Length: 147
Image 1 (cartoon, rainbow, N blue to C red):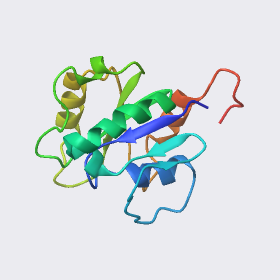
Image 2: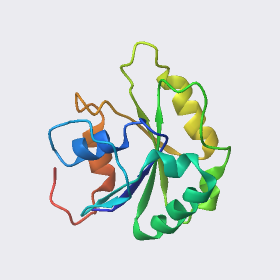
Image 3: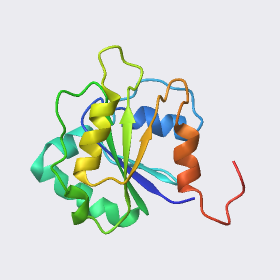
């Protein structure tokens, strides 16, 4: 399995997605520091929102095979500048979260992620599990056992 680092704003759903990818019971847990697990690196949203802390994210990408940029469908704007993925030497995927939110706009979130440079986009609902299997399949190595 490829290792993924999850990045995004506070409350974008990084930790919840991590729990869903690991098959854990979903419960709210504020990430206070960068957390390593076997195939997932979970990061606090403050790191993506603060230029000084963002430098740590750049360093941690070297420990992952894939970078996952999360963007909630409820966001009024994108945190990611256009073409930002060109700065990364890893594949970068976009992950739209909170797709079922009544005030959400998953299509707009996907457009922003594409503008940032993400070619692969996944829409997920970590609570129902929708889209989680697609990400797991993407992260699967050719010699990994089937899901």
